[in-house]
Length: 383
Image 1 (tube, rainbow, N blue to C red):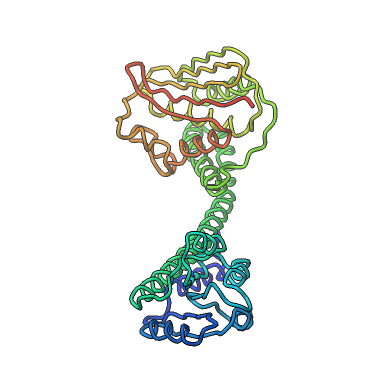
Image 2 (cartoon, rainbow, N blue to C red; image 1 turned 60 degrees about the vertical axis):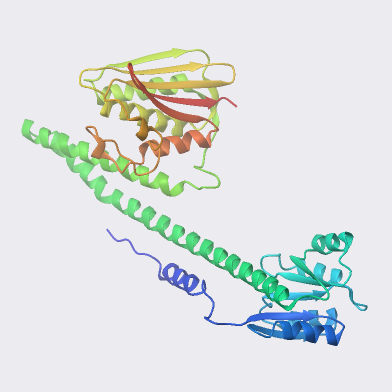
């Protein structure tokens, strides 16, 4: 078995990590746009401590330099009333390419009326300061905007890292599960040959077969886990399905594999809907198999399916050790395994995948324990 991770993926993660934090002690890059040289110099003097300030006498001059610059400044300090090109026009041009978190804009205005402030904020400005200003206030507002930009950049970079790492894990698990199938098929073939041998050989062959089936189920769960997307869930192939017929087939197949278990099946009402038949067969198989594993010895497992006008209800019940109330909330979380017999036969993804399939269909799944046993309830809308 060979599982090889792409070096490009690992290097991408390293590159993203290295760009999270800026250079220590770097000055805040501030561009001041003001047609008054005196006002611009006053603002520059107020920001001289800790800021690298560049002054432009007009909006057009600032935008021309902006188009040639490799990186935008940390903060734009913009006079709102300028004769050649107004602050609103400069702000609108900048917002066409950069949002408020990527390029903060602080407006300086001598006429801070309510209408003027609303105009500045509507045009995309982050904040404003009235002229004449207090030096400490201007410094604090510029530093606050620069800090917000820095935090936003860190969040964006962290999101990129998470996506790259998630893709890396998904590809690794997918390749691992794919490569595990080859030796597993060899085990199945060898087991079938051994079953035709002596009684002792059949005994060991049956043990191998059960182990191989558990491995196959675990591989399937891992692959389903990698296919799941937080935004869209598991992919579905919907078609018209008679869920009653589907559940009957699943129950019959499980009866063949577990002849010692009494399975009680109750069907009631119309159970046709638009669903993914393979996925719902997986739900039924997982819930019934889970009920068999955790039931008390020599007790039945009941499967009830009832259809109404708009939805169907599937209930799987066993008689076993009651599930503690504290454990019910996390029962469908990934990598959670029960403590009863058979709990070590998987990776703890079975019930999680059940919940993801049901959620993808627009339904819901829950578990409850009472004196009659443990009940798993699945509700699925027909449409």
